[in-house]
Length: 155
Image (tube, rainbow, N blue to C red; front, top):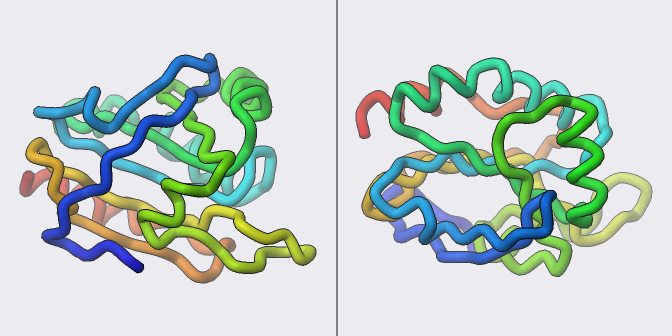
């Protein structure tokens, strides 16, 4: 299953890097930029999340909160967040349920690893509707940040 523009975003609750539960419903009435990334501490993922870190004020001005999800454990995500000084929640989808719901899960990733999140970006509006959906098959590609910003500007 893959989500399309106009679909209702599946609700979820995951543990953040500080082990607290975070739910999509916590952000009701706000736009959410939701990023799925394959693995912490890898080059392209670090570049992507640091790009978002550096642009977070712009996203906040567009009334968007940012959440990033991977299948890494909360403990791995905590160290990654600390080292890269990331300023938004990193959520652990260790059981792969949310990645699957969003159509963002590789069957097989590099080195034969199974069940790794695909690099994906979604903009979810204040009513919980998907306004932008980008699921990348090539983990070396970055999301289209310009298109994400344009979508948020129209929300």
